[in-house]
Structure formats: C-alpha cells, structure tokens
Length: 174
Image (cartoon, rainbow, N blue to C red; front, side, top):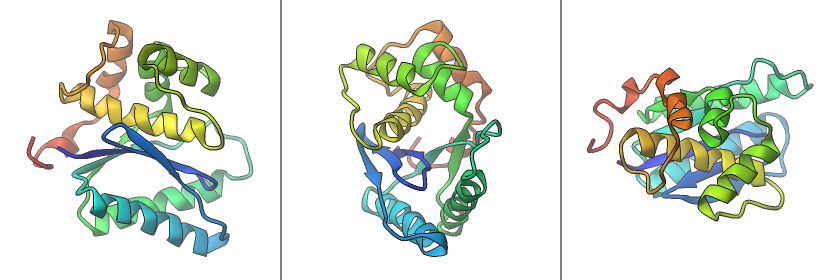
C-alpha cells in the first residue's frame, strides 16, 4: 500500500512518501494559492500511485489569524482527494505529537528532536517541522499496518488507538 503523510501549511505544506520528505511552496496568494497547493498534492498522489493520504487534522486551539485560510486550504485538499477517489485519514495533532514523543502536548522542537534522536533523520531549514510532521503521519500508518522499520514504545503506540483507520479497508493492496 502506498501512503503519503501530508502536513498542510499555507507557506510550506510538508509531504512524505516512502520516508522521503519534501515541501510544497508557492508564491501566489488567495484562491490561486489554494488551487496550486491542492493541485500539487494531487500531482504527487498521481506520480506515486498513492492509495491513502494521512492528513494532520485541524488544530482547534489555533489562535492565529491564518486559521481560516488553513481551513480553506484543508477543505480544498480534502475535496480534491475526494473528487479523485483518494481516501484520506485525519490524524489529530495531539496523536501525532504523542506518537513522536510519548506526550500529546509536545512542541515542534521536541517533536523534531525526538524523531531525530530515534531515527537519525535530520529535519532542518525552512519547513523542517512540516516535513517532520508529514513523515510522522506516514510512519503512524506504516506502524498501524505493521510496515514500520522502527520500534515504538507502548506509550507512542497508544496514539494509534484514537484514529479511525476504516479508510484503509479496500484501499490499495492491504
């Protein structure tokens, strides 16, 4: 089964396919930006024959002025995936943090440090947290499917219990 982790951001949407990460950056604004990012996501899905996308869910505690714009982008991406019959699974931000660190309220720096220490992977530079989050989302699915090369603690694995994995039924070859 081909999976893609996707951390949605207006400035650097992070993605991870087969553990290889990258970011989608566009210079446009407003509706054009939403269009370009969502089309880039579809292009990656097509290029890699993605069976299911793991999206970080909305952070309802967000207080910044970008919350509505992020919601618009998330809606555009979800609609494009749906229109193209690509199932997606939403991962709550607290589950992603708990899987990475064992704590659901871990900050971005702690998440990156924990993953780097465990795997030896180096996430740095602009968009590093978006790439790291996308990698974690993909690893969560791989772990659920029994396909992760890493060993996770019982506490980290408990983060998988709060996720609705039903979209995996019938997706790909699993």
